[in-house]
Structures are given as structure tokens and as C-alpha cells.
Amino acid sequence: MTVIDPNPAEKKTPTTVPNIPVADIDLMDVAKLVSKYWTNVPQITLIWVTQPNFDILVNNYSSTLMLRKTTGSGRSEFTQKLKLLDITINTDIENIKRYLVEKYGKKSAPSYYAQFGIVKVNKKYKLPYDRDERKAALALLVTALPVHGFENNTFGLTYWTDTQTKYESFLSNAEAIDGSVSDKVGAKNLLKKQIKKVLNSLIKVIQGNYPDDYKNVLRTWGFQKEKY
Image (cartoon, rainbow, N blue to C red; front, side):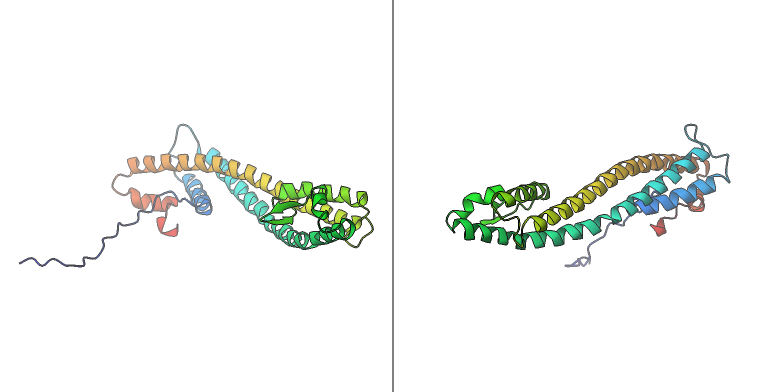
């Protein structure tokens, strides 16, 4: 009699680790090992790329990857500076609204907000949250201060000009880093694609030349899947 288990254990599909790693760093490490070992077996060839050329490709990939990481690491500094300055601006813009109420009255004050870059955000009047828009709003604010006689106030021309200068500097640095990182990511991805193409070709050549033992040979070359 066959007994059917009412709660059969779920069969898990075994995870297959590819010969070529996916992660950037792992790919770099494997490519370096493969390029180095390739010098020991000149009989293994590809007609469209030589070992020395592959070595140059790997070195370029390594350099580009490291530059991308180094460049990107600087972004957090300006992200944090912008975040803190945004908090300060959100608080201190209330002083401009107060100055307007004191000069023009509570009912009339909002009609002057636009001249200072102040807009309605989530039912409240603030400077825009979008950073490019906030940059433009700060320029309006600085221009409007002397027009309305607020240039010598505590939160007047000196204060807001300094704030504007800092904001534009932090934003400019952050955008420059973003642009540089984007360029390096593009270059890195192109080199990564070329390296994977070479590695795939080498795997096929090795499989063809060592049909009975290609798995061990691949490990000798540096394709050690347990490491990635």
C-alpha cells in the first residue's frame, strides 16, 4: 500500500552558479586570474583577441571600476550637506514670511511670496522642495530682499546670500559627481560586456579541448564558482 504524505516537503530547485560571476568585483578578480593563467597555456587561443590584449582590457576595467567607486563615495558628503541646509532653509524662510506680515499685514503678505520664490507646497508656503527649483527660488529671494527693505535684517541680504552661495556650491558638486559617475558607469559596463565575451569564448575552447576534465581545468584557470 502506498502512503501519500499529506504535507510533502517542497522541492527546491537547486541554484546554479554561473561560471562567470555577475558582481563587478568578482568579475574583476576572476578576469585577472584568467588573464594571468592564460600566459601559461599559449596553445589556447582566440583568433579575435590575444592574451596581452585581454590583459589590457582587464586592467582598464579594474581602473574604471575603482575610479567609479572612489568618485561615487564623495557623493554622500554633499548629499548630507544639502540635506542639512534644506532643513535650515525650511525653518528660516518663516522669517521672511514674518517680515512680510509685519510690513504689509497678514492678509496682504501672501501676495508678495512669489517675489521671494515662496510657493505653496502641501498646503503650506515654502521654498520649492525640488533642488533645481529651490536654487532658482533662492536667487529670487536674494533679489527681492532690498526691494522690500529687508536687506539689513538679521535674516537679510548677508544671511541669504551666504545661504544661496552654499546651496549652489553643494548642488553643483553633487551634480558634477553624478555626471562623472554616470560616465564611468557607462565605460565600466562596456568593458564588462567585452570581458564576459572573452571569458565565455575561453570557457567554450577549454570545454572543447578538455571534454573529460574541463570542470577541473576551469577551476585551474580561476573559474572557482564557490568564491562568488
